[in-house]
Amino acid sequence: MRCWSGPGRKFPREYLLTLFESASETVQRRFETADRSKADLVHEMIKRAADQLQTSLRDYSSDFATAMAHVEQLHQKGELTEQRLCRFAEGGKFDETTAALSLLTELPVGAIERALVHDTGDQLLVLAKSINLSWKTTRAILAVRSGAGGEFPEYLERFNRLRSETAKAAIQFYRLRERASKSRK
Image (cartoon, rainbow, N blue to C red; front, top):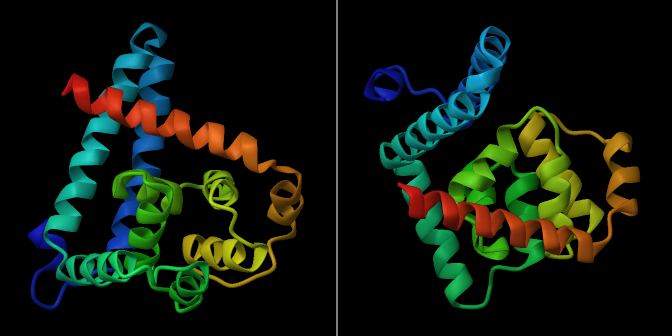
């Protein structure tokens, strides 16, 4: 990881996460095409590698450590509000947005990072709806994911149709899956 963030070579962490996410999906598709019987094994191996990379990138990121400490302090004081999250997202603050979503949804940082760097924003819609975020905040979070602003009309319709209860059930499933994954390690 140091080769990516050494002196004079500091790449934003979110770019590296996005790069690895894209490469992982490509590798997974190629392995699945070559041998369908090993698709589950390949998926699990790639997920573990992604988790290790995410953890390493966080461990080497003083920016993330600072952001997480700041957001945790806000959370402990009861000051981590939707408005604060919206300001982080509108400011393009990837680390703060990640930390805030993790604390507000009670999901691991890695799960939030995967949702933020994934090709589609559907996971983010579920996260946002599960904690009753407004469209304004959700749109700002989608902009952090895409790296560009916008109205995201394709997501607005899905956001409006998604029921909060459905999103909360999905988040509960994510939590159970994360716990099960940790217990297998």
